[in-house]
Image (cartoon, helix red, strand yellow):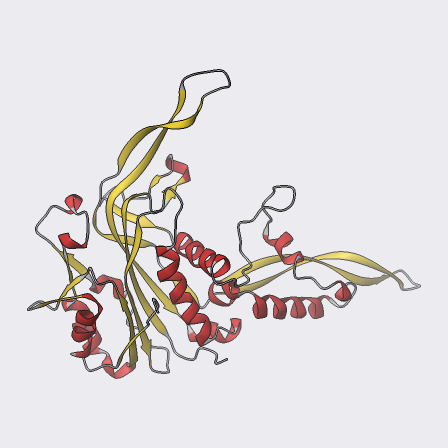
Length: 341
């Protein structure tokens, strides 16, 4: 399997309709918004959780950071999770040998550590000698493993202002036993939000975590299919709309903040938007920027939903074929990701 040698830059758009794309537990679990601009915000942690859950639940990949209670109903911390990878034959071995063996196993088995990295606290049993007679005993030593993940995302943001609506409903059960009155619940949703994420794949960090080209393909499936497959009550209503990956030629160059070159145009007020039928995705700035730096770009990888309409400032085209047609005008090779196949 080939280790990633090229820097990649990612734009990922998905929309949320009458749901809560990322609640803030410190604020009644309301959708996160910038109070000054009314822009909807989604943390990178939420997107990474989506990817992890898809790869673990659907593709049966082993992941390190998982939300699964133990036999007693408690969620493991990072140190406890690391214990799952300990080999009893290493007990008493030198500290560095144990760390290296444990690190190798975690990187080999856990795709999310190869993608996103982690800081993993450890308590390892090592032999120590003490006293004049050099008496040997086994003691616990604290240490840690740290990997900076090659794949990192900025906080996602909507490409327009949103409103947050408060909905009051009734629960299925009575408030207490013997009562006829049902419980009440309050939840918060956004009627519509088109959310843009920007990501970077760093080839230097990829060598450290042994990130492969196959891992990147799994990442893209996790972003697209993981978003589409979210079926929790607060998340159903999320639809992936666009995934663009810019694969650079070998070197350390990146354009940076590519999502800022994508915008939408429409005739309605921002808060009145309800679907892709209400706007056009404006590619004019993106195409100009890609053209400016095309000598540093190896290829463009694309997945797009058929509902989107794109514009280069002079004409409009629909769906993935239309998006690809506009990209090809820049003169950079374009490949379809074919995630839905």
